[in-house]
Length: 140
Image (cartoon, rainbow, N blue to C red; front, side, top):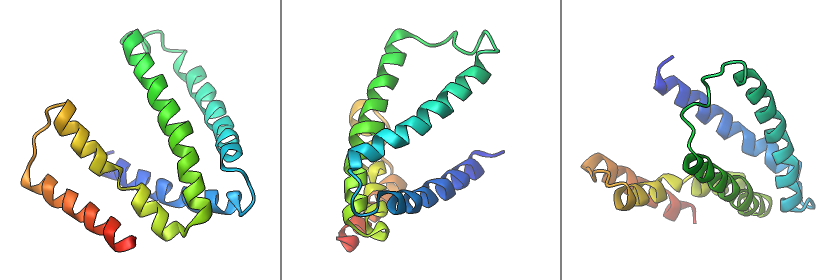
């Protein structure tokens, strides 16, 4: 399957899940408790995936301690800290406004990618950045 179709499937899943989360959070659930409950689903899924991968002895041969540490820190930031802020915003605001604003993270990735990874700044990327900024401004 081509990368484009994987991205489309990802968009459909990530576009559908906030509706379920908004309904699940309701008006009264503590967003931190929501993150804990959601994380249980992630843990169960990860354990199942690990059990399937563990059958291949070569699956982990390229993992370094520094790579593993970066992934653990990124998980803590994204799946716990970021998710708490996201759930709070989702609970308090309209899903049709919160998701596009929260989804403007490519702008942050663009800036950090150019500054920290030395990625090229191109006209198409700049146009994309302007579109993201325009979208956030229009939704505010």
